[in-house]
Length: 436
Image (cartoon, rainbow, N blue to C red; front, side):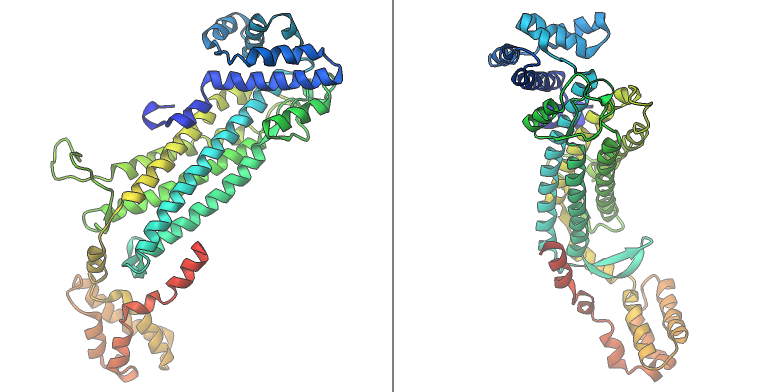
């Protein structure tokens, strides 16, 4: 994790002390249930929670010092807790294995991370909706292949983004549920030395579901699904970021990132206003997606378990969630403060002499009795003259002057096909689908 691209709430989830606190809760909850069952003395769980009630600070350095000798993080933690609690601590971890603690903890952390990311998505969706409603009927040019196509509105561009991030939210809710499981099943997952009711109790205390079959580790297809969803969200971030980057190009300049007082765009050129935030988002999206393939490769573990996944998850768990949290917040800020230039949008719409209305004329000619091929040929031969004049000529005037077109369509009918508002008659319908 890089502090420059980290926010405190998400970073806190992955701090060593936070991880050890979850470890303790798992062990203490298990001890309480085992005490109720008579597997261990009732006093064991009580001793653990009595110590915990003093809200002790986890001594990460002390645990690390023990691990330097034991070469085992869970054993180091158990040894340190035993030093704090006393003899009753010997009943911790009865019948459990390290993966019970590690895997359940990872899932707790991912659930907490998902909750933050869901809140991030809500904030982004709210910002997009506000700006979409603001520009519901702001005309702009739609582009395919980067080339002028037909008119749209800037609000529709944002409505499209809103629908996409709403789908992202649904996927993340499903991924959160997928990964919210608990395993307290012991070595190779047979419950030989720990009763399944202990697992259920711990799961209930942590707000998790039980893992139906855990072999010794929680199956990593769950985690692959989780990180794949993070990767999709990152791709959606990049998609919207690239749209802003394109719109900010000098030749386009229909919208741009907010440029604050005192901000500098270039160390060499004082005139520059660069899309640095959205370029940054493109890079951050790549970082998040880089976690997806390793998460997929973690699915295939040897037999009941190995630890080839462990080192991977120590990287991708914090890095992907922290980076995505930052990216979502940054994108929300970009959209919230985005500078939009309707006059420039209209200028660009008019840039190519009315070419954007060519399809309506084509369709009118077919309805007037010409073949589609002939209709296309007549419109295209006039459109190419406009194209080659760099928009200096008018498609409307050329079509009215074209004898073959005029035979099929009166001048007033041709003029009607250049009505910009025609393209926006279903904007309300689309908005109702997206926003309700």
